[in-house]
Length: 370
Ligand code: GMT
Image 1 (spheres, helix red, strand yellow):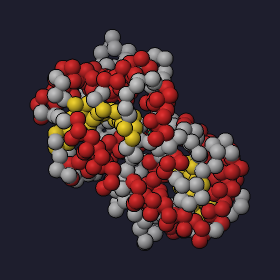
Image 2: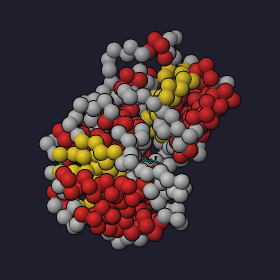
Image 3: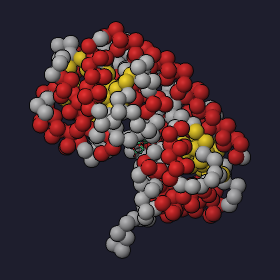
Image 4: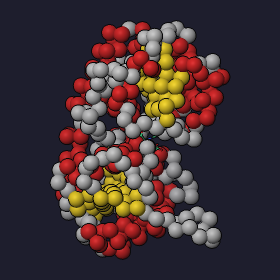
């Protein structure tokens, strides 16, 4: 098949999933064309043979808001015609679903469109009164709609009464790649005195509550020697750094920015901490599980579909700060329990979320549409 994929190229989960999907489809023999305003993060070092087409959004003094939606639709229509695309699969509904609709209007009904909902496109940005009508319309006009968790299917149905089917396809990872390395070469620099290592990884948006990550860690730190590694960057980076100062743990918290390869880091982690306010899936938690790292995360959104409470980690209520601290300590103070949970996490990742299980579901969906 000839497939176009539209996504945000940043380090957010939707871009990661889109990139991994495209690379996987290319390996299965499909012709894949990425259309985005920059090279997607996960394609930058990829050797997979996918095509990339940049969306150039024109600037003009009159345009207070550059017309990204239109530029995207316009270039997608050109690519669709030039390469004979059969499928245009957009990730994150806002504004990609409406651009897909416009593309289809331009090139004709043979082009089948798929919209994958990732979370805040439904729960936050999509329900904004300025956008909800067009989000609802554009999702309705997609030939197929998928969501990354059962939670998001429910959220979709509660917020938008579309009366159409939304298929659920869980996010996936390559568990062969996300695999704990047995030579923990990072340990001496991150935890030189054998401290316990807690890792958080996100795009530092307010929903990730990164200052709270630091606060939870500071309370854990009172009970045992530990270090916290904060991976990623985003709008709340300064607030998280300030929290490290405020809670007096700046010597034990390392902000390492965005990382291309997080497997070496996860390979030395004792715990992954994700106390998000909201999370439709929690791809980073799955990456940690696949590397045998137990997870402590809030019991929100789709996280209970990924993390099994008491087996692969703990899921305290999102405002139960004491519960978060206790859960972290239970894992960190009992190495055997931590290892068993980590092992169970990897088994769950392999059994339920490996690319080999979920990629064919997208392939099947495309075939049905054609
Ligand atoms: O975080 C967002 O606002 C959007 C999106 C992104 O691009 O990172 O994240 C969502 O999609 C991921 C991939 O499907 C999920 O793993 C994240 O849980 C989800 N984020 C939220 O629901 C907050």
